[in-house]
Amino acid sequence: MNLKRTFGAILSVLGIIGLIYTGVAIINHSAQVTTMVVIGIISLIFFSTGISLVRNTRDEAA
Image (cartoon, rainbow, N blue to C red; front, top):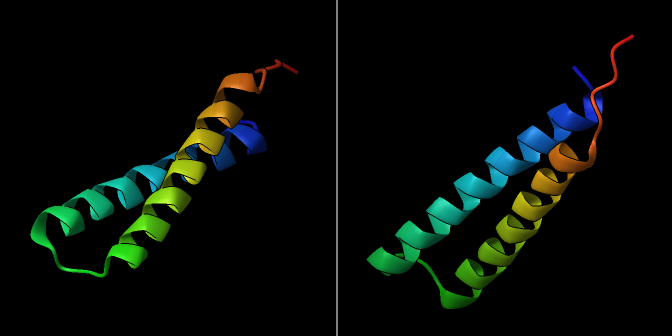
């Protein structure tokens, strides 16, 4: 498996976890607003970067 695809998958999973955490914290009002905004933005960046890495990396057979 390609290293870029693996890294993209890891970033995507981290982004999903961060977005879920942000959503739960916003619903429960358990954290500061600025903290949730920062975590949400970073999670969106991780998720979009991971998806684009997985999408744009070609699988080449050796």
